[in-house]
Length: 262
Image 1 (cartoon, rainbow, N blue to C red):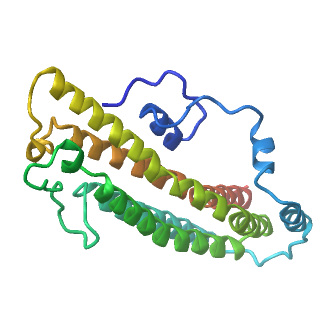
Image 2 (cartoon, rainbow, N blue to C red):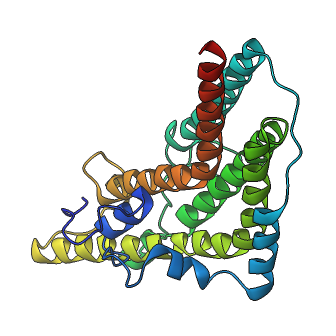
């Protein structure tokens, strides 16, 4: 079970808060402000590219009819909701999957195996990585599509879309490396729970029964729920840039419509 949050920065992402709650990362606010930390990720050549985007002039575009703007807002919102719902369903519908999306049973121990051999993290790592790949394959095309729509809208939104593409190119490799560390953090949590379970068995003079560990009260069942929670939080982080673009488009369209009505 997750411990109560005590140190996590309120302004941290949900993913950071969840990982801190599992005691696998330090949830305290980092030293220095956000801009300073982000600057460490941006090379000199990247800064030049970003400056070029900011300074580039944008040609005006033909006015889009109000009805078309409303239809576009609805289409983007529906596309976002559809992708997110599909991924949430993939993460939560069965919990633990194998590579073929079939129900997976807890690893069966060999006769005479001890608890160290009876439970292994490998299936969880494999399935977490599969879910990460699925998220990437669905979120990236959505983000690109939203950028394309913004690029055909107002000059300000076109510049925002260009800036987002530039930042994506600069930060994507660093982000991928950070996301790739999550399975290792969860392995740390897995071993913490297994050690606590083993200690409890020793203290109560009970023998380990691996076949019963996936019962609702079992520690593996609890770990599976934690893994789902982390995946959902990671999904939200990966969707944030796309959601921000959609919100900017909606705000711009609403403001434009208001000016037309006035």
